[in-house]
Image (cartoon, rainbow, N blue to C red; front, side, top):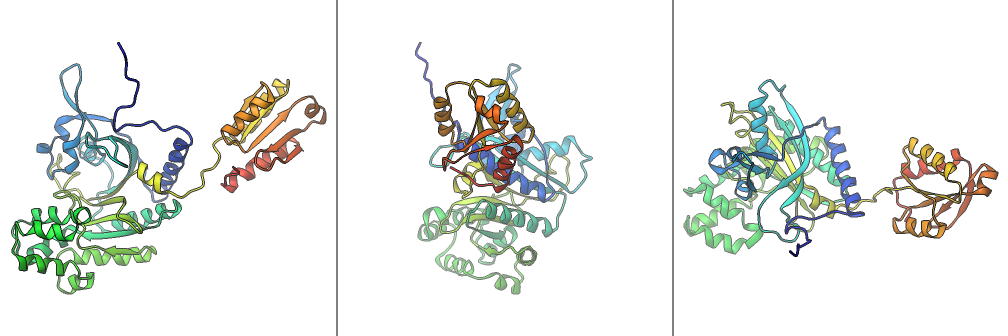
Length: 416
C-alpha cells in the first residue's frame, strides 16, 4: 500500500529559520502580556462538543460552526477548541472562587475546519489576553496600550480602530430600520465587497432614504454622537481620553462590526497602515463568561494570530547558536569550554570532525563565531576565535571569549 507522505491541507510544519522567528515574536508578545500584569493559563485542546456547539452558546460565536468534531472510545462527542474564550465559561463554572479581576493570557494552538487560503490555516497559534470581572473602560484602554506597545516593538506600522456595539445598535435604530442584526451583517461586508454592493444589499431591509441616511451617519465623527447622546458614545469618549493618557491614538470607525451577538460594548481592531489587514481584534463581552453560573461577569479581551503577526514583524532575530567549538584533536578541552559557555547562557555546538566540514556546517546555520582548540591553543592557554562574517581571527582567554559573546547577545543584532 502506497502511503501519501504529506501534510494535511491547512496544517504546516515550521522549520528554522521560520520556527526561530516565530519563537522570538512569541516571546516579545508574552513579555508585554507579563508587563501588563497578565498571568498565564493552559487549557485542554479537546472539549465536550456540548460546550462548543451553537445551540449551547448564548450569544453565539460565528467561528463555532467551523469546529473539528471527534469521538473517543467511550462514544462521547468531543471537539478541538476553535478559540480560548468559550473555555473561560467552563473555568468559571468549575472555579467559582477565582479572585476578580482575573487577568489571564494564553498562547496556544486552536483549530478550525474552514476553507484555507493565503494566510488562513486550520491550525494556528492564537495569542489572547483578557480581563474578567472588571467593567471599567480602564481595562479596555490598558489592552489597547499593550497592543500598541507590541506592534511598535515588532516594527509593524498600524492603527487602532474602535467602535461600540451599543452605538452601532442605536445608530441603526435611529434610522428606524427594523432588522438591526441583518443590517450589521451587511455593514460587516464593507471591506470585502465595497460600499455600492452593501448599499444594494441593504435595500432588501430598508428603503433608499433610510440607506442614504444611514451612510451619512457613518461619516460623522464621535463628537456628533456624543452631543446627540447616542448610546455607547460616552464609553468611546472615555476610552479615547484614557488611551490619550497612555500616549495611544485611536481611530473612531463607526462602520466597524465585530462578533454579532457576542460583543456588548467597545470593540477594536488593529489594522496595518496602508491596507485592510487585521493584525489583532477584540472587545468587551459582558454576557459570555458567566453563562454557566447564571450571572453576568464583565470581560474584555484581545486576540491575534501568531502567523500573521510573525509575517508582518520587522525585527532582527538574535542568533540562536552563537558559536561552534571545533576540536583539533583536543576533545576534552572542547567539552570543558562548551560547558563553560553554556553555564554563562551562551548557546553553542561542538564538533570534533574535520575542520573544513565543521566550518561549512557553521556557515549553513549562519553561526557568527567559531572557536578552534588544538595543540597550539592549548600551549598558549588561549582559544582561536574566528568571526565568520569578517574573517577576523583572535587568540583570547576563556574569560575574553565569554565577554565577546555576552556583548554580542546583549547587542541583540545579527552578525550574518
